[in-house]
Length: 225
Image 1 (spheres, rainbow, N blue to C red):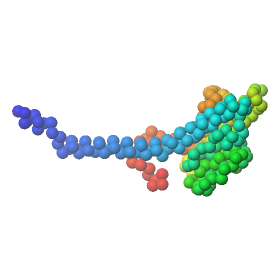
Image 2: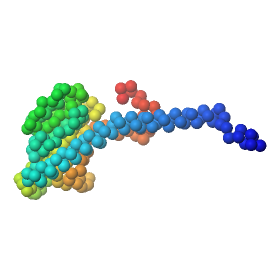
Image 3: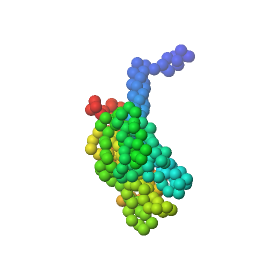
Image 4: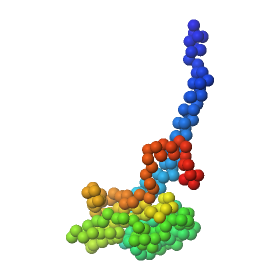
């Protein structure tokens, strides 16, 4: 009787095959999810948002010490690590730290730092914010006048808006993020709190649910995708 009961608990060839296939599919899904996160997560979320928050924190610390906002990247102590896909704009135009060689040449009065063009050869090279093609939700000063990228006003009524712009898929459109020291209101009436990074323009098309599932399981149909 015990021997017969044990025989019923054994998995047959078909069950073993189905179990193996299911296990492999789950493993593939896990690998694809991990790879997709590694590929897009740090670039799209961590770099731009984290660096803009760091810039905001640096500006606030500088304001506490100097009673004004800084107008140079190095004076506020903001310098993204190499390997950055995004360029950062403290002002709309001005001196640029290029990052197109193994060792970068420090530009003490830089207001813009480019993407790491030594690592990413096709990274955009705008000489000012206008060259990015990025939209921008403006801020407003004490009189209600619109504020763009830069440091505006005089103490104690200063404000600033900074921008990050990067190309994540080698097309003509850049992904654009902004952060400001004043609250802003988007086109839908939503309030963007001060110090919160805001996605002005998405560079990557949003896939459908089916496309996400297919890509996770099978990978991209385009071998370059």
